[in-house]
Image (cartoon, rainbow, N blue to C red; front, side, top):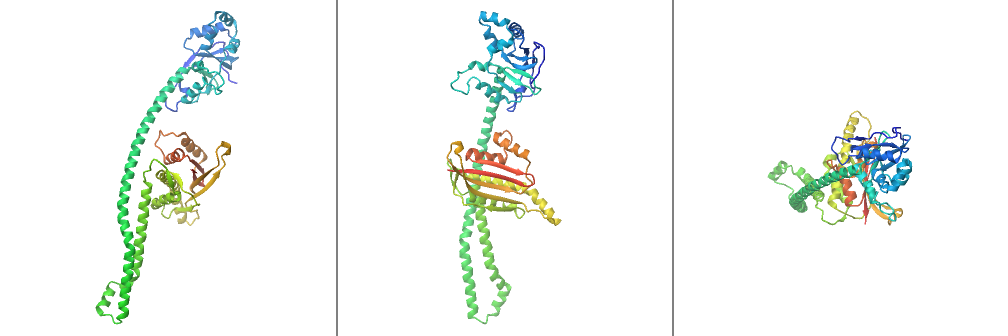
Length: 462
């Protein structure tokens, strides 16, 4: 039990609160609070004189032999004294009797409660959860009992709480406005960048298409010319000396063998360039207002192609693809998500790749850094939530890096769930918001020190 002073009536005190400016994370312990303790053995007359002497007190904390008993506000006490007959009666009665008559629902909160949360709880007092119960608008003015960290109790004037909460709501509104303006500018920049990249990719695809389209003809023409030369050699067994000299000078035998390989290499390079430009075009795609069916595997393959220069041979990418139906989504945003998640896995493994090189130098065995991408379709039983059974596409991106601790995981997940964007937004936070808010999906993070990290994305199939 919590003990305070054993005096019948303690002189009140007012804490000044914190001298630091309030922020969205501020708690009620940073606000001014009253400490006014009265024993329930005191009479109503003594309490009346006490409240008359200290006119700023919103109420008093009642204790019994130093143990917290309850709270009576100035408003409720004065209501009992309005009637002259009641006044004579209650003036002579101990506070334990008066408290039973004046008792109301007391809002008791720990000192570390956030100010905005405390205001929500205070406002709910005038509207009970049961719609059949009468409304209690007078509860809006009742002070709040605050339980301090040292196991004592204080009173918070609800007007102080409302004033601080309205101030913070103004700050929050301003932050949201500024953030929305930044987001508008950022969206416009990304849209302009998308249009620029889209135009560049079209300009690159035109000559690539020209090269790709003519390679087949060049290959056929070269084969025809070689056949023609071979036919001439068959019909002219004695080749003139000038022609033999020219064949040696141009290394005709090597040219004949290498020409096919050179054309094949050009064709492979053009194909890779075409895929790269197409992937870049898809990644910078400007989404329309409406979602459209998208091949998830194609999205992932495009991202792997774009980051291939970072991966090289140090990191092995394993794809375990299931048969997936098209998913209704915003393709450009999903490309952004997969780019963020795969890049996050690559960043986790770069250090591992360096360690792998050291292990190989000393002929020590160490598992090669790898990223495993797995897709599947699952059915979920939602009957407990009164929702029909549903089908989901699951995309898992796992690495075998160093992993993160349980505490770090909880911190990351808490920040994602809270949706705080006061700091520069991370790639994981952006991905979480796109999956959950824009696509109605789920975002899961699992990791274990020394055993890697797995990020799982679930998208609903409508």
